[in-house]
Image 1 (tube, helix red, strand yellow):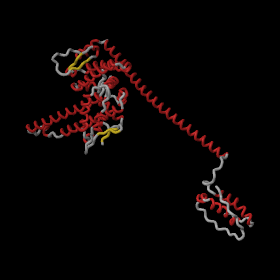
Image 2 (cartoon, rainbow, N blue to C red; image 1 turned 30 degrees about the horizontal axis):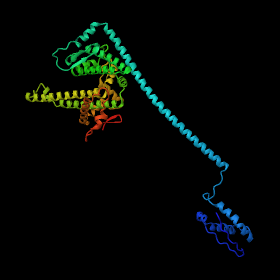
Image 3 (cartoon, helix red, strand yellow; image 1 turned 90 degrees about the vertical axis):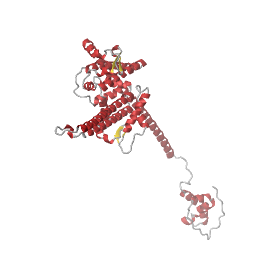
Length: 471
């Protein structure tokens, strides 16, 4: 900054001009001459430290300028040199910065280690489940082998059990044939032969299949060869065909088998509980998508069968009372017409009820469950003949879904037509997909997600984040 020098006039009779208010220091700083005048004049009238004109004249420059500069805001004051306190503050701030960086790095390392530990723990749990499933499978196979050895000591019982099962099939037998390859010999059975099997015959044959399936599962898990996979697939399909044939054409025998232990033929005092079915789900290692598909199909089946049951009940209430009266005989022509129409309705209703159940089981066994999971479920359920609908109901209860009674009570509010349209499309996809026995073919995330299943004015079953509810 350079100040312009001015000539000092004698001070006699000098009158100081009143000071003007400082409104903008920046503008004064830009005009050095005005800043000099203000600094020089501000000291004379305010302090009046001396009356000597020369002293006033000489002192006004130094003292007035210093006072003005001290009064300037910090914004315009020149920057001072770093003091010891400033250096201490700078060192402290740098240390705090490094400390925060170390803390953040340490936190990131802890989070990474925690994530890796969780992943390792999940892998350990999965491996533990696999080992537990394998141990149960080994125990089951050992138990079956021990039971088979005892049976071999009684050749007459074995001969009687298999005499009818492995009898030669007549050449003129009609209908589909079932292949049976257990016991080291290939045989074929007609549907009529299977439908006439006694509970003892089926129990003995089924035990042979379970033993073979258990051995194949162990070989698949241990060796993972194509030959072991093919053997497991072949035996599983034979066992599934055997059960399917028996359920279709020998309902009385199936009902008896459900109430027996197949290893000793003793009646079962009570059916297995939810814990038993939970172990089956763990043994089969079902995925979340498979569980959702199973629950949804179970609810579809229960809802539609509930609607058919309500229709039968309503139709039966329409039978005229006089048809059962001994006092007043009904007109025979009207009576035969009414009862014939009633009989046709009941027959069609029962046929559809059976078809609903069969289509659902077909979707479960051929699409949702793989062939390996089918074998695991049946091997681990032995000595009981698994009731898949009971397993699905237990699975729904564990997931907090409505009970079968609640589903049946609300069946009349549900429009099931869109769902069965989707199921038919699902069956068509299964028939066209050759891998349906090896991998899970999604239902909810497959055909159901590609087709709109809603209808206005009705309640439609939906699945949302694992919950199935009527909306």
